[in-house]
Length: 76
Ligand SMILES: [Zn+2]
Picture 1: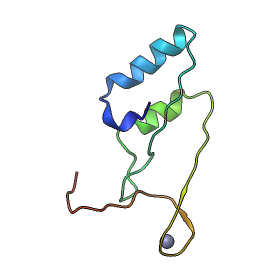
Picture 2: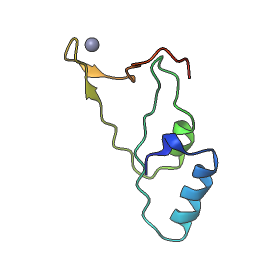
Picture 3: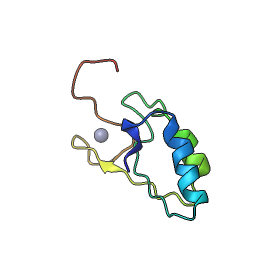
Picture 4: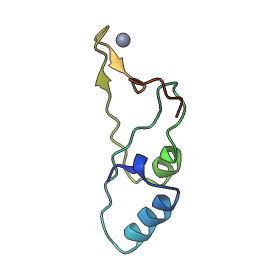
């Protein structure tokens, strides 16, 4: 599941599923376009047994892209 589209209840849902013995795999952005933690990413990272952090490649310089690229002008 991609957590960014859920509300805070997603953290408890993940815990409930894991406590039922289910394997829960969550894909998430960890930071937004200004580098601020993305919604509940910190909570989810805190309860994760394993974390596999990936980075995109910056189209401009070719380095690892560590924050999200904002295409629009919305501040949300
Ligand atoms: Zn760059």
